[in-house]
Length: 109
Image (cartoon, rainbow, N blue to C red; front, side, top):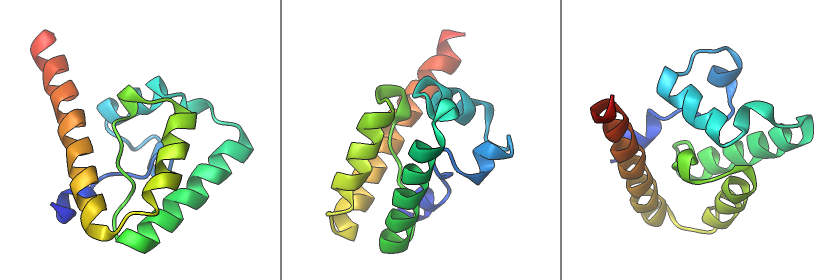
């Protein structure tokens, strides 16, 4: 499960900046407004992403289709208080949400 989490890109991270996210990830991050962050908001998100990855060893994963920037930032701050086992479980549940949405999009078209 942890290996799956390690494969996820950082939210609004370097891959997004370079246009190297999958089309699905790009669309999902845009839906949460992560492509239009102010310099300050992007800096805050980057700081929390780095803190999270340093603590847990994998990127912060959240279903951005179900959240906007403020909720994402609040969630990462809150989840930094969890232990690694909690975050592996929570991150895995978020991956399941992302997967369900993506499968639905494939079947829908």
